[in-house]
Image (cartoon, rainbow, N blue to C red; front, side):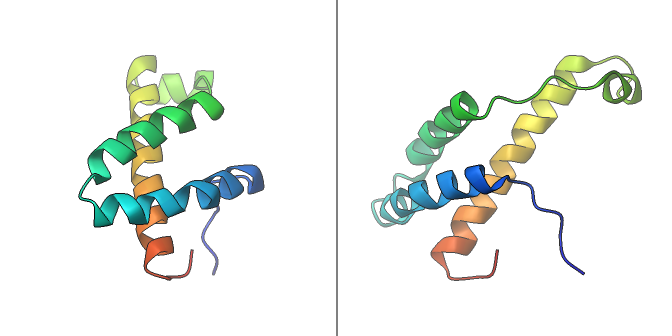
Amino acid sequence: MTRKKWTTNDQLAWLKAHSEGFAEAEANNTRKAFFERILTEWCEEYPIPNPTPEEVQQAGGHEQAITRNMKELDKVNMLSYMLCHMNGLPL
């Protein structure tokens, strides 16, 4: 069974293009600064969509919480991608 992709092909190409900097940041112990910068660039390139009315309803009307959770999920997914890509693991 295959996992559902969390990126579009365009987003995957963007991540691949930026993954070299992650290895360098790991080597230079600047991973936190790199990750903060790349997450900002990612959010500018691929803004988090507004939650659907159904998502807002499921969250008890807390639209900001949904957006915050979606941003956190992007962070986790990006870090996982970078770590896997850097270590040659399947994506």
